[in-house]
Every structure is written in C-alpha cells, then in structure tokens.
Image (tube, rainbow, N blue to C red; front, top):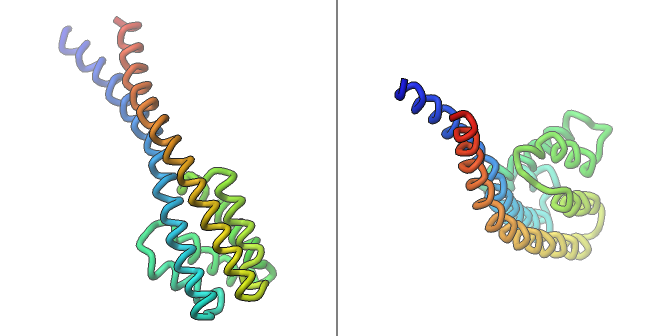
Length: 174
C-alpha cells in the first residue's frame, strides 16, 4: 500500500514540476529568439543595404547564414510570397509571424517592430531602409532587456509554482 502511495505521489509531483519548467522555458526562449532575430536583422541589413541583394535572395541568405530557428521565418516568408503572387512582403511576413507565433514566444510588441520593418523593406531607398533597420534593431534590444528582466523574475516563479502545486495536490489527497 505504501509503494502505491509513493508511486501516486510521484505521478502527481513529477508532471506538475515538468509543467512548471516548461512554462518557465517560454521566458528564456523569448530572450534567445529576440537575440537571434537581432542577429538575423543584422545579416539582412548587410545583404540588402551593403550587398544590394534582392529581397528574396537576402531572405534566403539569412536562413543559410544563421543557425537559429528564427531564421526559418525569413525562408518561410519567401516561400509564402512566391506561392501567393498577389501578396506583398509585409503580408507574407505577417502571415508567417501569425502562423508561427507560438514557436517563437514573441509578444505583440515584438511582432509590431518586425511588421513595421517589413512595411518599408524593399520599398524605400537604401539610406531610409538602413535607418529603419537600425531603429528596429534598437527597439528589439530594448525588448530583449525587458525579456531578460521578465525571465529572471518569472522563470523561478513558475518552476517553484509547479513544485508547490504538486506538493499541494499530494497533501490534499493524503
């Protein structure tokens, strides 16, 4: 009987702790994804402004040159744009961010920064685009600082809540 109680307690405690850990990982993943997006935008800036590559080639090069999962957004955007010739870059980018938003943990503000950049990409001259890239990168750096603060605060909280919730259920059932 005692062994069954221990097994039942473990079956409650372990999943609740894992759930707390998984929820806390969202915060650190957001920091990593914003950092990766900043790096991707720096590559894209080089591709478009300095190398004068067309958007489709620049987006593909970002995916090839970056080893992060965030770079897939750029490849998917070009694929979406090529599959839907009636669309523009902004709409294709918006569609990909909407469809893939759960994979990257971007907040609404993060997405708005990226979407505002996508509106001017390939539309304005190189000096104007360079200013928009710089602005977007600076805004993402601010978002990253906020994400780091949130991660420090909330990661520990959710891990502890998972453990405490598991212990609470075990105490209630015993």
